[in-house]
Every structure is written in structure tokens, then in C-alpha cells.
Image (cartoon, rainbow, N blue to C red; front, side):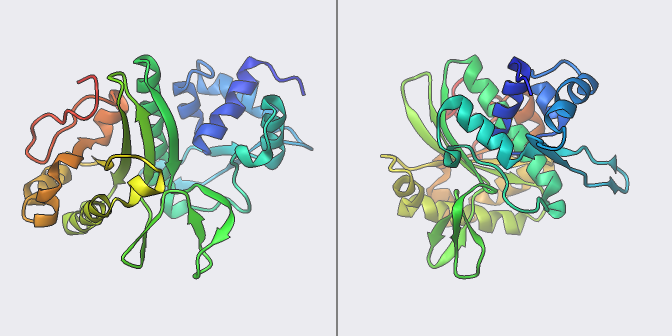
Length: 281
């Protein structure tokens, strides 16, 4: 197969995001239309007998219709990228085994859209995402005692495994490097979300992510919501927790819709005042 620039860019996008829908690839500028992308690029990369990418179909969901397919690198696709860049296969992550996460479909695809928005913001403003680890990333086959894969984002907090949705470090335009956790809250259970944020406050107080990534300062938590009403409810309850109120300067709140529209805009402290940790708003 002859790999032109669009095909190489497509393969490289999977190295960064792991899974992508056709719409997300259009958002990345790989091709102008979803139909053109499927006809001109994806169909070629999926061609047998040696496909470089594969797709998984999640079927129909009541009220939503047929869900967009998710596409991902095969081992051969990862090997092709590794050869192109002169690196080892271990430097090109790709899914190993069956791709099955139907219960996580909406959270995963939306989280990837947030990741895309972050990188496009960083590129447009001369900043750099030094690394981005997702909750579905794992390195090698290292497993926990319960046989679950060790996730790249996880930390141990008082004997409990906490798996943040995403951890990343941003080299910012003001010269600072800041370490962030990105959490996407799909539910409306404010009590559950408060408990989750309290765990993040404990992680901050114990310096667990700073130690994990050998970062000199505490991390910040970007708390993102599907529903603005849920976000406001969490903000109202935030100071009821001494643990959270003591660490309030580390937490920023926003809606998923706003973040996808413009990553740096709309962030708030729990008091609804502008969150100044991110540049550009």
C-alpha cells in the first residue's frame, strides 16, 4: 500500500487518540467530509488481507439511532508507524485483544473529543501537551492482583486504586509547566461526584500525581460536565466538604459543550468566578 500524507496523518492520529470516529477525524482536518474520509482513506487502510486499521460497530441505541463506528490501529498499523518513525513497537500504543466497551462508548468518545479540543488549543496558541495519558491506556501487560490491567493514569490512594480519566502536562505560553487531571462526569449523581473530587483532593494533598510524574508542583483538576445543572449543583455543595474547600484553588469547572467549542473558555472556580489557571480566557 502506498501511504500518502492523509493516510500517514490518519495512522498518526490513532497513535495520539487510540480510538476515533469519522467525525472526529474530520475535526482533526484529515479530510473535509466523513463520506470522503471513509471512501478515500479508511476503506484503503482497512483493506484485507493486511489491514492497518479496524473498526468496531456498536449498533443501534434507542433514541440515538446507529452509533458511529470507532476505528483503531491494528498491530500491523502500529508496526507501520513504528517503521516510519524509526521507533520500537512499544512506542506506538494500539489495542490488544477484543475491543469491547459498549457501556463506556459515550464517555469514551466524548472524552476523546475533549482531548482533541485540548491539543487543538495548544497548537493554536504555541503551547505543548508534553504527554496525555487516558484511563483506557495501559503499558504492556502489567496487571493488578485482581487481574485488571494497570492503567497509565492510576494511583494508589490509601490502598484503593484511583483511575483518573486523563492526566496531562501542559507547557504553557507563560513559561510554566502545569500538571492536570481531566475528569468527565457523565452522570447527575452529585454525591458520587463530590466523593470522586474528594479523592482528587487527597491525591493533591499527598502529592501522588506530582510524584508519579516527577513534577515539582501539585496537579490541578479540570472537572467537566455533560449537564450545566449538575455542575452548578456540585459547585454549590463543594464548600460543604472541608477537604475540598481547603484545596479549592486546584479545581476548575466547565461543561463539555463549552470545552469542545473552545477549550480555554468558560472555566470557573466553585464560586463561579473565572478560573485563571488556564491561559487564554
